[in-house]
Length: 376
Image (cartoon, rainbow, N blue to C red; front, side, top):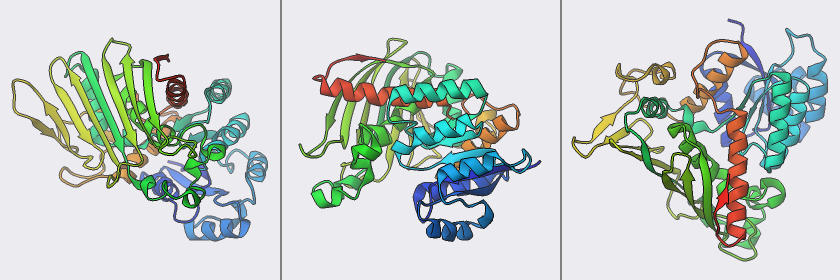
């Protein structure tokens, strides 16, 4: 099968996001990293391209030149899909221009910095019939996909309660020093948008909730914490939610939870039992019941769903991790671009990215207006 020509914007150097996307793109042998703009400094851009094994003739001095010159190439030579790995404020203008020029897009989250821009991207995508994925990475874990399958088959019965937590501690080391804060783009409203914690990790928790349950949040009430009056963006927050099946729940997020690393944890309670999962131990899904001992479900086994097994690369007992999860999302996008059949939920869509930015806006509105309920 002919490999899909992939361009990358951003992600140069040793950034985690850049490494994650590059490895993911190569994982299933579906893509060829053909060109891009890895850094705004052209000399560094070329240096990184050489490290990544990219032909320097396809490395461009800036994004506009990239789009202009790649758009002129014959169809069999042109880059087909572009990964946007830049800070938040650049997602919309870059994705918009890519869609206008009929590129497929893989975009880091949050999709945009406001809901209005997300609606415009959705309009352009539908107009041009392009594939658009938003990389909520954790939905790529095989056992998460199996949990989604089990929930869709009614294994827990009606969902009654959800509790999603995403705790990190890394901002605690900089938040107490105003000078250090200046060097963190996620705390800069001009770059990050209207939120830090909710925009960065809260959207992961929100998307995971809707992805797994198939339900949508209809209302929310938020209480955020900036820690200091002169720090404009939230670094901690709690959000009460109401779902469209009348269930209720909570999303708890923090970037100042001292000692926490990347603690995304999921608890979904239904009439018949519950599921619990932790990102830091991603191969273990716990199934709870009032009448039976707790079960442990692991990937790579014959009892797993076709959806889970399609993204499983290793035999049972061999751990898979974050690179594998992102690789599965890239695999789903490749299927869509190649017009192959793919599973529902194989990659997060632009619509789900749009839901994510709506969630951010309503959380911030709820907090600013006195911690009141807001409708989605």
